[in-house]
Image (cartoon, rainbow, N blue to C red; front, side, top):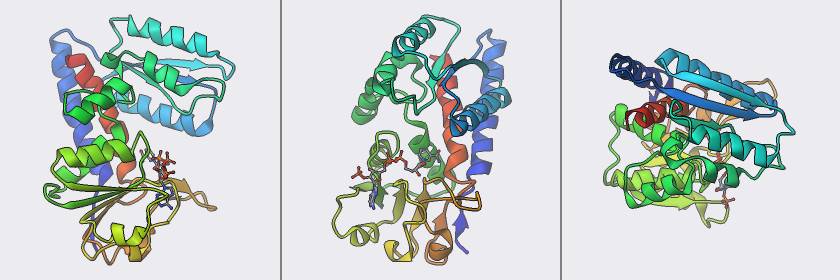
Length: 279
Ligand code: NAP
């Protein structure tokens, strides 16, 4: 059996560290507050939002909840975000994506003050990440770096292949691995000889949104595999972009789904909120 990289355990470790930090901040008279905005009633978004609020309660972060109707206009959402930008009590602003089709998510992301951009999606945050300046980092890739480091997996000098180039996972993941001195290759839907490229990886991060796509012929013997994908099968069971059963005997370490990357995303959101309050 390979080493199972336990995201549940590591995320709890991080939240416990943050809990202590938050109580120290409280002793200094500082509170931490996250504003969470959901537009519409998409059931998956409601689950994500509730999990984020639960994590806030666990860590000691106050959460302000804004549940807006589906027909909310872009202008109304922009003005709520602007109001929260100016509210000194609020340290972080999270707008749950996806938004209804009539609202341009890019406009909303750009409206959030970079100082309160705890999702790390604002172009200023992304630019800072690229040039190595301090700033908020997208939570899922930041969580993956924590998973690797806290599991004792060396990144420096290793061949790292990232499958997927989305703005929220693939691209920031590649830059973070580069920052940790990995030798990074990014693949996407137009990559030729995909398996040849992925088989070079000492560390393979898979974020393509295709259930059980990565089978044993994609991985090198002894590779570390990080599975970002999240899908529900016909029996309502969660699975990832990697065919876990097929690859598990070939790899040295792997994240399970559920219980791998998923819990880390929320832990790093909490981390970003505390960092925002400390500034
Ligand atoms: P996305 O925006 O759909 O991007 C998918 C990427 O995969 C694209 O860059 C695409 O290439 C590439 N791709 C698609 N098919 C491919 C193929 N056959 N071979 C190689 N590359 C291929 O997805 P995302 O938002 O990054 O999310 C990816 C997965 O992670 C989803 O399952 C999502 O649910 C999950 N996710 C989980 C968490 C978590 O907290 N656990 C957080 C975020 C996302 P092109 O650019 O060429 O189209």
